[in-house]
Length: 444
Image (cartoon, rainbow, N blue to C red; front, side, top):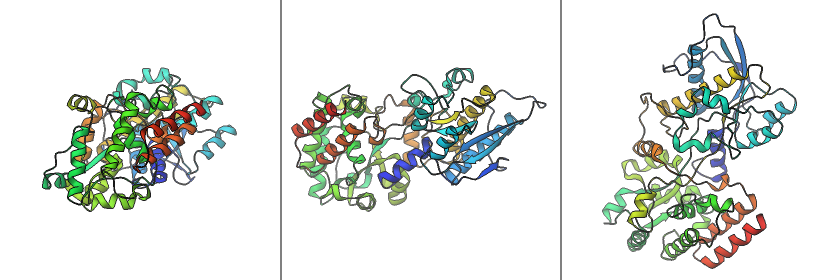
């Protein structure tokens, strides 16, 4: 996920549910070393009838095993009569789960992303969780900025989410800015000043692995979101046109900065390793990537690494834009089979597992990208940038979308091509607008 788009999509799917691991089936006894956490569900009577539920979930590495073990251990404290039989997800883009559904063998609880949700909605294999979201108080526990992970476009909930919104960040090398007397830009004019200053020092202003197209969309989206918080999602849904002010201005500014030397030569031929090396080795002042870059940037640069709030047209737009983030997530998490015997119990367990899964990720895995609020003490401290992001997440007022999250495949392809062309310096705003508007018409 830290490197290329293909890897990135795989990890995103992991945080929101793509299948991982083998196909083993095991009985969960819970992790004996799991930290203690306060109960979030009503206690079950000691003499309650034993119930076994089958759950299809990720269990492939430390990032998926430890939070799952913790959640199961906490479940045993709250619902000792419930036994979970784990069926480990296969890394097959959901094919095994779809086969289970087709053969009437769907687990009681399963991890589902939007693809599975949409497929199972049509076949009536997934339970609508609206009443349980309210009944169990799950909605009250959601991060306000992550409500998009709870409710689908049809207004219903089909899974209890644990993963929050992924975000694209503009990283910078604090020392390079300070040593060269360059102000961290807050406006486009200051960004141009920084570009010219670093070029004069032989330092690449901003590194980007534009051989992959999603970072190109992300950079464009960042500029758009300073004036239009919905960013590229409005284009994707046909609610805006490329010649609308926010979208045309963003293209104008990127072209101006690219022509001024903002990007390394041959940026569209650089892969992640090449582009990241420029930033990690102190040869580039800024770098575009998702928040998953924090670990690698901190390892390479230590306290020198940081991320900045995005430059905007003026000071007022800059301040307002601090809570508008580029990037997003989608509905997904632990879902319930529509054919499970005890729907309310299965929903209660799925809700509980999701909350505890997120809780462990936040407190023990230094990961603030969770959908729900966590009020437990942090066991493993966040690195400085993660700490900053953890404080920003509750304040986020809007998110946009990564290119892989766009709903219109034809328009997505056109947007990726057009934004990549913006990185070359040989593409005009008029051509950009023309290409996108043509694609929008063709995609209808």
